[in-house]
Length: 500
Image (cartoon, rainbow, N blue to C red; front, side, top):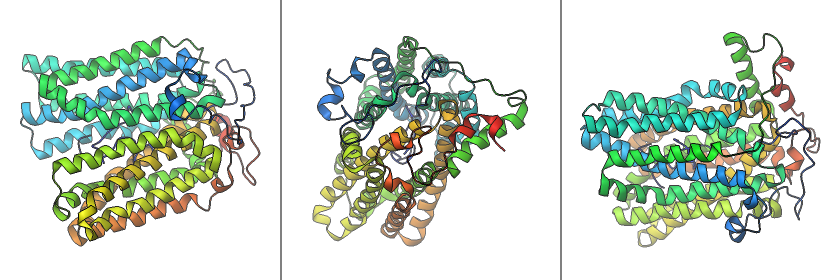
C-alpha cells in the first residue's frame, strides 16, 4: 500500500493510500442551462455510459468523450494537480524534518493541520459549493493553493520558514483542497453528458491511480535532485496549470437555484441545507448502504494501514525493496480496476458489480495475515493482495461515484458529496487509533484478522440492499421509478423549502 494522500485529493505523511480507503472521494435531469437533457443512451447490455472504458479506448481517439475538449481540459487539470500533490505529500514532511528539524509531535501536527478542514468544514463546504457556480470555485481553489505553496520556497530562501507557518499553510491549503474536491465531483456532470459519465469517471480514476503509483517515485527523484523546497514549488506550479486549463472550459454553467426567502439566512439556513444533504445519504435506499459501506471500509482500512508496514518488517522480516515492490502493485491494480469498471458494470450490473468488488476485496485481504504461514511465498501473496484490493476498490469507486452523480440532483450534489466525504473522513483517525490500540494489545497478525472481519462487515451493508437488483445507472437516475419500492428523496434535498 502506497503512502498517503488525496482527492487531487489532499487527501499525508502516514501510510494511507490516496483514494483507496477514503473517497471510496452527479448528473441532474437538467442541462447546464436548466433545460431538460435527453434520455441517457443505453449501451449494449443495458448499462448507461459504459462504452469506451476498455484500455484501448481509455486513451484512444475513437471514444466520443475524448473528442470533448472541455472534458480533456478538465481531465488534464486534475491529472496535473494530482501529480503535483504527490510531490508535496513527500516534500512537505521532508522539508519539516530536514530543514526545520521537526519533532515527531510536530510532524503529527503537520499532518493533522492538513486533515482538519475535512472534519471541521466539510459539511459547510458542501453548502458553499451548492450556492455558487463550480468552475469559479475550482479556479479560485487552484490559484489559492498556488499562492500558499509558492510561499514555502520563498520563505525557505529568506529564512522565514517555521513550523507554525507550515501549520497555517497546510491548514489553508487543506481547506482549499476540500472546496476543490467537493466542487470537482459536483462539476463533472455539467461538462459530461450522462451517457458518458461512467467512462469519464473511469478515466479520472485511472489518472489518479497512475499518479499514486508513480508520483512518489518522481517526487523522490525531484527532492533528491533539487531539494524539498523546490519540489513544493513544482506542486504550486501544477495548481497554476490546473487553474489555467479549467478556465479554458467553455461549457455554460447555470446559476444555482435561488431558494425561497429566508432559506439562505444565517446559521439556521446553513444547518437546514446541511441536514438535507445528510438526510439524502441516510434515507435513500441506494445511497445509504453505499455510504455505510465506504465509511466502514475506511475505518478498518486505516486500522489495517496502522500495522501493515510493521507486520511486513517485523513479522515477515521484509526489507525496503520487497515492500516497495509490493506497494507498487497497488497502483497497477487500481489502474486495472478503473479500466475494467465499465465492463463489469455492463456484464454484472452496476449494483452487483459494486457488491462483488467489496466481497472480493475482503477475501483478498485474508492473504496478508496468511502470509505468515508461508514465508517463502509471502511477497507474491502480499503483492496479489495489494493489487486485488486496489483494483476492486478502484472499480467500486468508479461505480459508486457515477451512481451518486446520476442519482442526486445537481443543485444538491455539493452537499451530498461533502456529507459523504465528512463521514468517511471522520472514520479515518478512529481507524488509525483502533489499529494501533489493537496492535499493542493483541499483536500485529491478530489485528489484521480483525480488520478483515471489518471488511466483511462493510460488504454486508451492500449485499442485502436494493443495489443487488440495480442493473443500470439509468434505473437510479434522478426521477427514475425503476427501483422497486424506492422513495426518491433527492428532489426534497435539492429544494430546501420542501424539507421538513
